[in-house]
Image 1 (tube, rainbow, N blue to C red):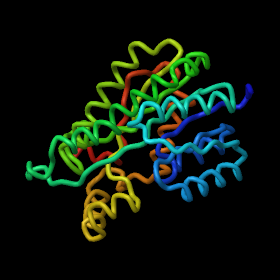
Image 2: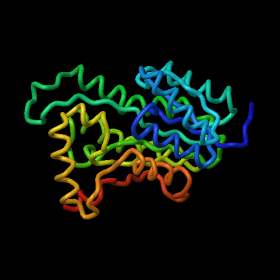
Image 3: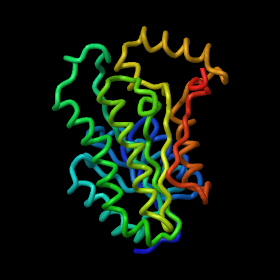
Image 4: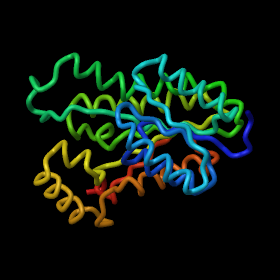
Length: 254
């Protein structure tokens, strides 16, 4: 069935940045695919929020590291609406390990993180390519991280995977045009339960306060502020591809 409303797939959209992105797109007249790997109840809640904003929704359980799951998600989307106009590669994972403790990571950790954070986005782009090209003015937005630029963050493996995602953004941008723009957002510290649980409540508050005190804009990211930049890449920036934007309140300047 063909729809006149534009359609976006947002991976990892049952919480955090992904949830904020599908809600913002819904408020702007898009239909959305809510993807989750394990949190079905959370995905349904986000879907209801999107429906309340006027969107038609599709909920897809899929691990983006699984190519068959990526192909299925793209196929279900096209079967439902007949189109894909935007893809947001937001699903990601990490292992928290201090950078100086090299024994804190092994090859399986690297393979797991790269499978979700790098291979997953590639597989999603490949699965959606035909429908995205048919859109004529489609957008892919990869959710990278300041970690991929500065070599910081939750672990060396995480930083390396996000750096690879940024390189892949440039590589794909060269070959996906003129029908598809490919860009990336690079958030710094993002407020939310996921990070707080990963580093502990005390460290979370200490780092958040320190960054907000030192950043020129005196802010850290929220899911909503990251979603705002993602949607700007989707709906605007018509002559921009292969670029990334740093979202950290100006902390990178310090």
